Image (tube, rainbow, N blue to C red; front, side):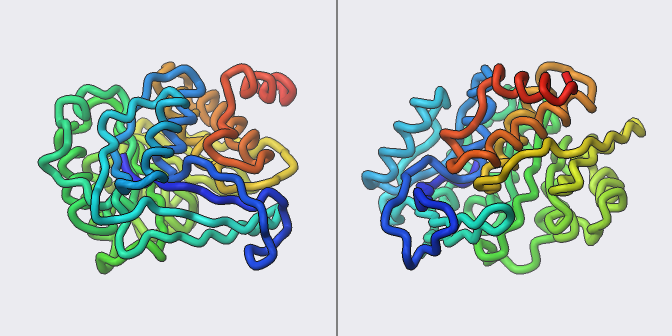
Length: 308
């Protein structure tokens, strides 16, 4: 549930937008990419979001269907345009984003009474993001969806801190409220600090568990990923070495693969190694949604790393 839009990426890397003259058009938005990533791995996925009533909105809904993502809950909003995001691609670690979501993004216009609570409750995994809490009525709708689940199944809160998209005052009270209703939290050090006040990985994981989740996943970039479960299990795994082309979609591939592994009932270390491999594959490619790997590609990377 959450953000969706059109990504426009220069087709040449290392070129500033002012000099770029050819772009690729892709389905974008972190939750949409996570849905695509899980679908690529064979999971049945659906999206709750909104687009503008314009050609870009029609493009996004068509792309979701093409990727195998159910778009029945992706509706049009007549008075706001479909968002566009531009990216500059400067490997290995600089990828500035420029969000065009004004005057307001349609995906923030989901009303609480529009939520199909039965479908939300019955999903084996429900994924939502911090951006969904950034404005009304999306905030109320996101919390209503979480309350409808009552922690049934796996409920994932992608902390997804995007300060340029936040206009609802201090975020922590809303993050704390959502954390109390979720079972898994996923974020990097900065996002964990926004949510809990703790940026050191182990302290952040403990703070997320204290806030109510059962599993805290702290992404550490080149240092890999840490996961701590309420039962005391703690796992750290290193990143998969890769030549980075565009790091923006790696976290979304990680998220889709995380859902896949949790649904499969794998032990935690295997889940994290699999998700890391999926993220590395996407980091080595230009796009996000179209770059999401299939299961055999992830397994080939793990085979080469000797980590299956």
